[in-house]
Structures are given as C-alpha cells and as structure tokens.
Amino acid sequence: MPQPDLTLTPAGPALAPRYRAPRHHDRGPRALPANPYLRLFALPGTRAFTAGNLIARLPMGMFGVSAVIMISAAYGSYALAGAVTATGLAVGSVTGPLIARLVDRYGQAGVAVPATAYAVLGSLVLVLCVHAKAPVWALFLTAALTATTPNTGGMSRARWAHLLRDDPDALHTANAFEQAADELCYVLGPVLAAVLCSALFPEAGTLAAGALFLGGVLLFAAQRSTEPPVAPRTASGSPLRAPGMAPLLAVFLATGAVFGSMEVVTLAYVDGPVAGPVLALQAAGSCAAGLLYGRARRAARLRTCLAAMTVLMAMPLLAASTGFLPALAAGLLVAGMATAPTMVTGMGLVQRLTPPAQLNEGMSLAVTALLAGIATGSATGGWAADHAPFASFGFLIPVTAAATAFALCTATGVGRRTPVGS
Image 1 (cartoon, rainbow, N blue to C red):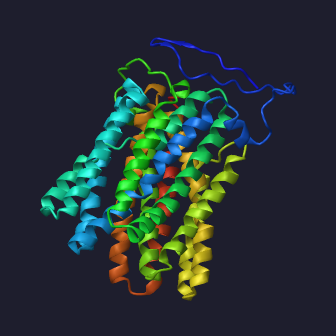
Image 2 (image 1 turned 135 degrees about the vertical axis):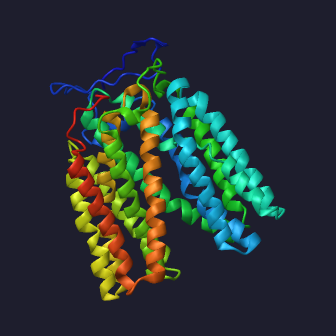
Image 3 (image 1 turned 90 degrees about the horizontal axis):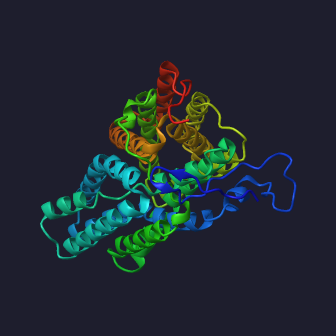
C-alpha cells in the first residue's frame, strides 16, 4: 500500500496524509486492491470519516419530513408546515456559502461542530414551540435560526479532493460514491422520519434527526488525520469569479428544476400511499448508476451527461401517458440513472474550477444553486399539477428543464475551459 507523506504548508504540517497513486509496476503484497471502491477505503482514516459523515448526512432527508408531520399534527395545516420548512431552506441558501467560507478559513472541525450544535439547538426550540403551540411567527423565526447547518457532503468531498489530489481516477470514484451516498440518505431519511413520527410521537423524527446529526458531525470532526489543512487567506474573492463558475451554477440551477418538478408531478400523478415507493425508484436508479459510473476510469463530459438526462427524463412522460403505474415506476427507475453521473461530473467540475483554498465555499454555492432550482421546479410542478390539461402534462417540465440545462452547458462551453483549481 502506498505510504502517506506529511507535507508542509504555511499553517504547519498538514494533518491529512497525501495519497500517492500506485505505480503500474507495484505488484507486491502491499499493493492496493483492484476494486476502485476498496482502494478508496484502504487509505488510512477514510472509513472513520466516511462513517461519521454518513451518520450526519442521513438526517438531511429527515428534517423536512419530520417538521411537516410535526407542525401539521399540532396546527392542522400542511400549508403552514410547508411554509415553515421553506423558510429554513431559504435562509439556509444564504447562510450556507458563508458557513462554507468559514470552514475554508478556519477548518472543518473548528466551524462544523459549533454550527451544528447551534442548528440542533434551534431544532429543539422548534420542537418546544410546536409542542406548546406557540404563535405562528415563533415557528418561522425558529426555523430561520436553524439555518446554520454545514454542508456535510461538501466537507466529505473536500477530504477526498485533498487526499486524492494526485489521482484523478480515484477522485472520480470517490465523487461517485459520495453521490450514491446522497441518494441513499435521501431515500432512507424520509422513510425513517415517517416511521418514527407515526410509531412514536410527532416530534420523534426531529429529535432523532438532531441526535444523529450532532453525533455524526462530532465523529466526523474527530477524524483530524484526514482533515484538509487550512489554506492561507487569498485575495481571489468569491469562487463566483472563477472562470466558468457562473455558467456552471446556471446549469446546476436548471438541473435542480429537473429534480424538484419530477418529485412534485410524480406525487400528484400517483396520489396515494404508493407514491413514496414509486418515487424512491428514481433515487434507487441514481444510486446504482452512480456506483457503476464510479468504476469508470474517467468522467464523461457534462454535456454528454445532460444529453442523456434529457433523453431519459422523457421515459416517465411516455410511461405516464399510458396510465399504467408499473410503467411509470420503470420509467422513473430508468430516468434516475442519469442523475448521479450528471451530478458526479458537475461536482467534479466545481472542484476543478474552484481554487483549493475555497473548495467548501465553491461546493456550497453549487448546492445553493441546486436548491434554488429544486424550489423553482417544485413550484412549477405544483402549478402544472393543479392546472394541467391532461394527467401526464406535468412530466413535460423535467424534460424541459433537462433540455435547458443541456442548452446552457452547450452554449456557455461549461467544462471546456482550463480549470482554475487544477
């Protein structure tokens, strides 16, 4: 197995070992495994920080569902529950890049732990407010105060980017694993939240999510051997100024609209207890495709991935037009297979375009663009569900959004410029 070397930085010895890709002639007993995923986790410290990050990431799919169930049960209004959770997301889209900038400047452990503790404390206050049926304004205020959640997935990707900066093939595999983990957490999280809230009491989902989130971040932050060293301050300004970053964020915005609209129109079309499992097939297809994509030696071009997404997103539209639910389920499974490769390739571009000293902030901006697109797609999909001339009309929206993302990528030449951060 290749041995790590500790490099010197302006901040002192780097805590994270520098990974050296194995040479072709290395065939000794210490050589890394042939499976690319086993090679990743053969590196010292990677299993521990990945385990902590997965525990911390699972609640990201729990908080929203738990809040909706908890608030609607106490106040009898899904509209209020949705508005409160949307407030938290809206404020988080502003605070997220700022917290990521602090992570870049002061280190993951120094920022993520207090930011998480503050967010969890806010969630506990929200539980108390709901339990006491506090005035509605208190719910909105408390939801806004919980928006200090750090981008746990981005911090994990930043560790991989630092450890594997000399091996782009292994970094591609790591990014694919992270995307598959995202999909898995967003499938399991809502299910776990719904089970806890229904089997125990309405506040159980939020309480469990807070405990998992804080415990996972503490475990993740404790793995100091893999934490990227704090880079010296630079005068380069926001990563938005990096050439190619603004057009890439526009592509992420349109891609987010694909996800948001597909979720809403599917729920409206199925409209029943099987809606969740049917929709989960899209994430399952994405997770499987992401793991397979990670075994490829190199990432495809983003334009190619978006073209495939445009084509595959037409599958649910065709299936919905038949009115046959199993056909829609199969169409969503196939359509989901374009999601992870597109996101892996896009996040890889973010890593290459962003200066290394601002990597967390750059990835947080990408997530913010995605969330804005998801919100836009959700609103558009909801309008279509209420006013569509025929049942399958809403499935035109994700196809249109994917085609828009492809057109933006092609017109702006995203992915063809020389990366700043490479």
